Image (tube, rainbow, N blue to C red; front, side):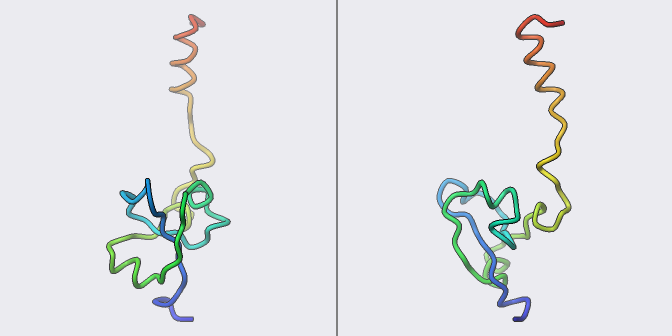
Amino acid sequence: MTDDTQTVYVSRGWSRRKKTYHLNKHDCPSAVKAHNLQETTKAEAEQRGLRECKSCTREYNNTNYDNSYQQALKAAARGDD
């Protein structure tokens, strides 16, 4: 299979504003949460102006984030200074 005919996955519906495609719908945390994934080729996805998902390429790890700001806001709202 050449790179152009590789199967990729694109979100449809509510996330049409997304500009990415996914390489694997089972291993990518973003794709697992996506609704209505449709199969297409990598060439077609790139022709539509989509880029490869950063979670799929391991450039971005959305499972390990710092939520200390949100925790501080919750504590302040509770009065736990």
